[in-house]
Image (tube, rainbow, N blue to C red; front, side):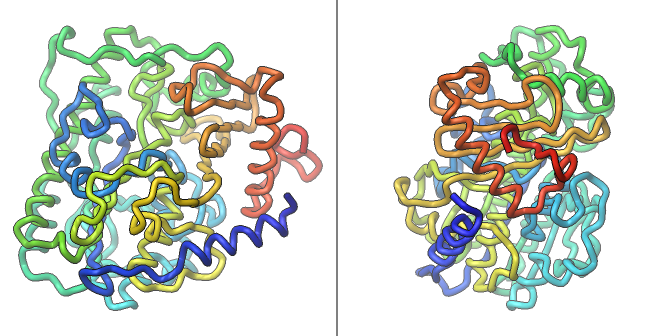
Length: 457
């Protein structure tokens, strides 16, 4: 497939997906965006995880649509959130790491500004991280409802919902937890939660993919060796990892309790009728799989995130959809569609609003999605994940076994790297070609002009 044909097909898909949607409750719904930090997709009891109990997230899932294949745009807070609120992949706008401000020329086209200009009352509470911890008041189209602090955030959001807000409104409730697992691993005090000591026998067991697969990318261990602050787990025993997993799940339960206060406010104000409620996280956590904690690596636990959409009147309540979704650039496009806002020129996000409205698990959506990474505070390793419906292709920019290929139907735990097996060469080449097209379209900087990052190109 040539680039021209790729672009033509992409435009046809965008035209189809961005068609007007019919919302029965009101023409433009309220939008309530509940965001956690560092929550992996399986850290919810509604997906069958018996090591955790999340009754309030489960309430959202029972009322809405669970997307099983949602992925972050980047497995690091700043770049992930940059994609959510600008609609661009982070490398395109010079925001591949934490702590980088949004370019001035994008502020007027950021999501809050677009929605505010469309008549929405835009309010933001909690963690911003694009790039400051708390959002500056009125700078990005949002009024600051509450600072970066999980203590009191839910109450502030609930009070806003209780006090007859202007319709339509766009409320963001952005929690820090379970991000406190970072402090737990460093044996520091936790900012926004307390985790009681647990007997080892009460801690969850180890995951089936606890060990690294023999053909895992060696650059991951290299990066771990360079950043002790992020990865103080090199000498963890199996018992240490069980305690880590226990703390992580308890932190998710803690933030679930806070989310419940907002869900209660939605309930008592009968906002289910005319609101779209979106729940997700900016990225996941290793949770001990492959001996990994934190983010940056492209393991499934790190890049696969929860995504639940509750439509007005709880349309398609309890449904599950398998289509591929990027919760960064696609979120931007989706909110624009629900808000009746034209998507700015040059953006590539594919709205999932019409997909959610259809509730159809067999509906054609997008053929693949991409997640990009730049390891934080280490050796600056770059990487990309390209996920198709069945396979997941990973490419790092250096190191042994820098290519990974996994069958997501048979090996979601990523324990057998098919890239080293000749019989999967054709599948590997197909995914290489797709990533090559994506890199060209998004102007990914190569090592040198004459040396492409992808083998064979």
